[in-house]
Length: 232
Image (cartoon, rainbow, N blue to C red; front, top):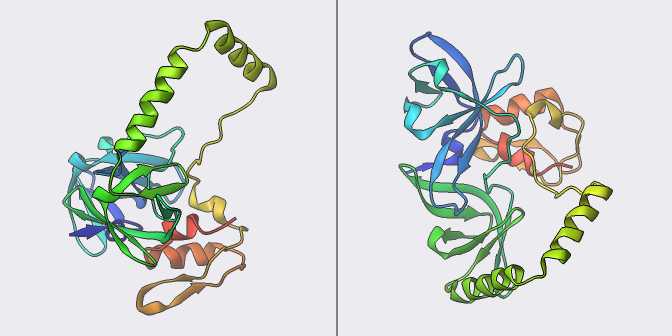
C-alpha cells in the first residue's frame, strides 16, 4: 500500500543522466478518483513543472524516485490539480465527514480516502467535485438527474445558447478553476489551519505567514500539498 505522502517532496533521479531532475510537488488522479495517473515534479532552480506518468516510474525508496530519463517528462503549461487533499467530504445528507489528508493506493488503484475524521472506501465516493467530495451508497439518482439535465440542454432553442455565448464573450466571464500554484507562490500567504509533520511536530500555526523556510520544512515532512490547500 502507498499513500500520497509516499511521493510528495521526494527527489526524482534520472538514471540515464545520473541527475536529480526535481522534487515531487503533486500526485495526479483520473476524474473519478479511482486511479493515480502520475506525478508532477518541479525543478528547484526555475520552478518549472513537469508531468511523469505512472508507466515512467521505475522504483523508489525513502528519499528518491527513479526514472529512466529526464526526457520522459512532459511539459505542463497550466496544471489543474486532481489531488483531493484539502477537500471536505460531505455525505448525501450534508454530514461533514472530514477534510481529506491522504489517499491510500494499491499500486496505482485508489483504495480509500483518509480524512481527519474517518477512512472512506473510494467506491462510496459518488462525486469528485472541484471543491468537495460527496459520499453515498447509490449514484443511480445522480445519474438519472444528469440524464434529465443533458436532455433539457439538448432541447434548448439554439438562439438561447448563442445569446449566452455572445454575452459571456462580451463581458469576459471566466469559468473559475482551481489552478495548482508553484510552491514559491505560497510565500507571504496565511495558513488557515495548523500544519503538523512527523511525530506530530508543528510546522506552522493557523494564521501565520508562510516563508521559504516553512516551505522547505513542509517538504521534509511531506506536507507541502496539505500546506497548499490550507492557506489563503
